Amino acid sequence: MPNDIQPWTGRDLPTASRPARLRSMLLSPELAFIMEAHSGLSAKIVEEAGFQGIWASGLSISAMLGVRDNNEASWTQVLDVLEYMADASSLPILVDGDTGYGNFNNVRRLVRKLCERGIAGVCLEDKLFPKTNSFLGERQPLADVAEFCGRIRAGKDAQTDPDFCIVARTEALISGYPMDEALRRAEAYHAAGADAILVHSKKADANEITGFMKLWDNRCPIVIVPTMYYATPTEAFREAGISMVIWANHLVRSSISAMRETARKIATTESLMEVEDRVTSVREIFKLTGNDELEEAGQRYLPTTRNVRGVVLAASRGAGLASVTADLPKAMLDVRGKPLLHRLLATMGESGVNDVAVVRGYRADAIPADGIKVLDNKAFDTTGEAASLACALPRLKGETVVVYGDVLFRRYILDGLLDSKADITVAVDSTRRNAANGRDLMAADRADTAGYYDDAPAKLTAVGAAPEQASGEWIGLMHLSERGADLVRDELAAMEADKTLATADLPSLLERLMKHTTVAVHYIKGHWLDVDTHADLAEARNFS
Image (cartoon, rainbow, N blue to C red; front, top):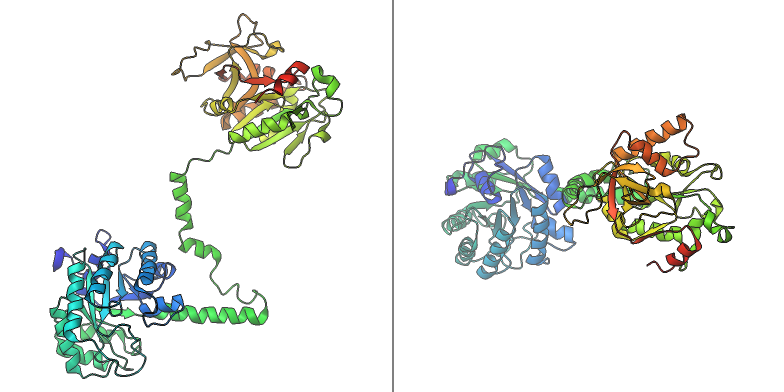
């Protein structure tokens, strides 16, 4: 037995190549069955049904393409279909190669291309090119035996996989020739190197086939196509010593019947009501075509998509800007033709923080809800920043960025903050020691070393530190991990319970948090701006 291939015993050989599995089926003492397919989808269905091999039917592929089974589809067009079928299924595919699409030269090129695509074998019929379907007409002319044997030898010489199978199909019986001619041709094709012989018949019974088998004496594997003698019990094929049965065209025929019935019903009723429960669901198509695998692969190979939420605190009028905020909150002041808030949101979006909610307060109507998620602190005039953040409690779930609504900063600052692995991280400018609001001066357990490889974050140790003790100014930007968001939510609830929430600022929240958890410090050096005064507003208009 070639290449130590073991006969197929009804079980798949997962470590064997597809050509080796086809060869094993042909050489097995057990009767093997392969099923017609004509597309990637039908190939999947054949495998799903439990068949061990596929017959790539020339009739079915031609019908699927809407052309006649007369070599109207070129061999390269058929090859394209076969490539989809081979990709869609792991089963060995035996291709209906018609006459080989020409002479010996066409055959050897065809075989090379089939081997390149992992096709297991090809069946060549001893007729003339272009072929005519076997069931059309009578006494179709057959190829010269010597010439056809040359096609077989050329194919065997051209195969690049030693297990690739060439099945030689004799049309002698189906064309009305006597049994002797069928036997003569089969023996010549076997001697030329064919791995199996397909004996075709269009009789309504299997007498020609069984008669052939009695005379053939098992000289090499025999393949049959019982399309016309379908009523013959399968056991008769086993008793006759047949190696393989091809169910040759029944998937394409059944699909035509089903499509016609569905099309007629919809055309007649002008509705889907009578067909929806009779057709395969779209979900089943997704299953067959492997959408679940694609989703799993995306999780392995695509960059992880982070769902980072944002909360912008924009409830303030701005005491230092009272003359220009009579009709709108500070966050909506114009900065070179665009509101300050919109510039902030754009920077957040560039860093992947797109799911952002804005907490409104003063002149809430001036912050339009169109395209922006908004939350309102209706008690903005009597409460502080912590209370505004508490209005966003439903948003404090999962990874979150919290930022004041009057801050502008370069994108790299937020990118660096998002890289922090700590649960709570605040951005601190180590170059600033004189903040407009002394509460924003922060002290950490170590100063900014400016070391390139110093990636470990510092730890916040004091809020509202004296300038000489401060490590820098908090810029009003904070990153929370999923656990960090839970910690902040719990702390806000505790502040509400002890009645300190209403008047607390965010530095007060940080001060409470650092007593029972680590608040990390991410150092920066400039490239940010908070808008508190007219001078800040003028500088913001030069900030780019």
